[in-house]
Length: 161
View 1: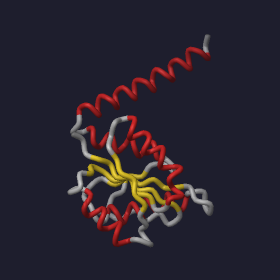
View 2 (view 1 turned 90 degrees about the horizontal axis):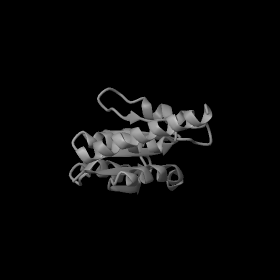
View 3 (view 1 turned 90 degrees about the vertical axis):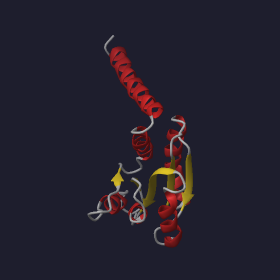
C-alpha cells in the first residue's frame, strides 16, 4: 500500500487553489489529508505535524502558503520527507513574494517548488515520488503522460485537416 500525502495550507483562503491538488491525488487513488497550519500563527502545531508525518504514514508533504510563505520551509526543517511548496498568488505582489519565500531555502533544507498556484503539478510530483516504490502508481503516471500526448496530437490533427 502506498504512503499518504499531506496537504498543508497556511489559510483556508488557499483551499480554492489546493482543491485541485486534492482532486489530482484522488484521480491517482492516492490517500491524502488536508490540514490548515500556519508557520507564524501555529508554529508548534506545524512543527509537530511535520516531525510526526513519516511515523504517521506519509510519504511526502505538500505545503501551500501566500505572502511570506514560510510554511514549506518550516515543515521541511522538521522532517526528512520530501516537501513540495506551492506558492499561492497573493493580492500584494501577484504571488512573487510567495514564490521567492518558498524557493529561497538555505542549504540543507530543500523544498521542491512548483509554479505559483501550481497545485496540480505539486500533486503529480508527489505521486512521482511515491511511484519510485509503487509500480501501480508508476503505470498510472505513464497512462497520464500517454493521454496528454494523444490529446495534443488529436488537437494538432484537427487543426491541420
